[in-house]
Image 1: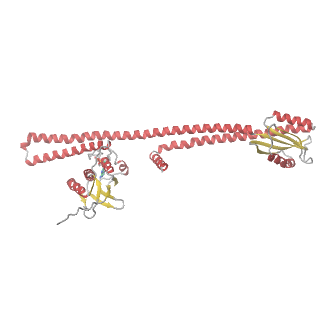
Image 2 (image 1 turned 45 degrees about the horizontal axis):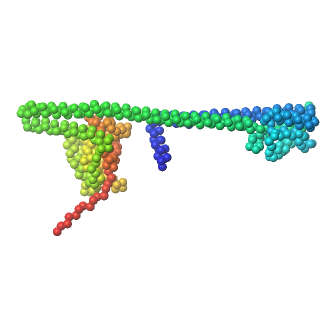
Length: 465
Ligand code: ADP
């Protein structure tokens, strides 16, 4: 399971950062190229050695062939064969035999001390003797493995001056030293290969880490930019209501007597409304720091959510009316009773934010609040749908990030902090809820929040009499 998770994460990371693919390609390509290089070099080396050994065997036989014809005495021949064996450390065995009529029987034979030609090889040499004779050729060669050492064996006819076959020479030459040499070269090459793979791996891990830092750095810069935007916007949002409130307050202070009662009330209402905006901005900022420091305390109770939803819809209806928008809500308190574990105050905040946004980002049409009891998933669903600006798929991906605001020609004159949805999501999640969005640019948006359903408490029964 852990491995599957890890693989999934890795693939996720690669999909998000395709630049890392070049490192992975390097990880495969560099060792593969090195391996190919080592293998072809070693193979060529082995082939080369085999060819050298074979030609050495043939050269030794050529020399002995001449000798057999010139000095047919057995003792002289034996000495010569012995001395050839001694002077050539790779020759393991030499035997000179008679020809066909002599039944290919050995005339002289010598084997290096401590070595023994295996019975299989000896048998094969005997078997091939008649073929080598009949073929009247350059000879027959085969390789064998005698006691763990690779060996080249050759049987070749010997000729007199007239070119007639006078006998056979059988020889075995060890390729052990050459094999040992190529084995060591191969071993060394594999060590180097292993070292290079390790080095490439370390480099790639480093590169990946640097890559992650680069991604992180990019994100930090983005957040930094958002923060800058937020600070200039917050300063503006904080200053504007204070300036307006101060203006109205001064007017009331200096010229209250000159104003009618209605004018005084209008100014006072405006001051209260600006103070409310200011407070909501300040409480958003405080909420952010509470959430970030894990200090958001919830008062969770099992409650019916309907009363809170209705209260929010009723309160906010004024803003919808002011913009000429219809705000629709069907209270299903009686038809679909439900209970959820929530902090009512925070649910109110979530709904004010979502319905408030729908009104804020909708020019004309309708904002609809819907509820549904999803018994299958044991969730209570609240959806807020509007016929407003909507947003692109790209904007939807970043929507719940802190300070994120969609920047289009339609939104640039609408004030906001980019904190509302981030706070909303954090609150929903802390209440074990969830939030999602479906939206289409120019058509509208639908925000859906869900909370786990809890069992409805039986109504207390009143005993009469
Ligand atoms: P604010 O509204 O203060 O900018 P939010 O976090 O509430 O911050 O929203 C973030 C951004 O999401 C907004 O700036 C806006 O562009 C976009 N948005 C939110 N709700 C809607 C909606 N109902 N319709 C269109 N855009 C929306």
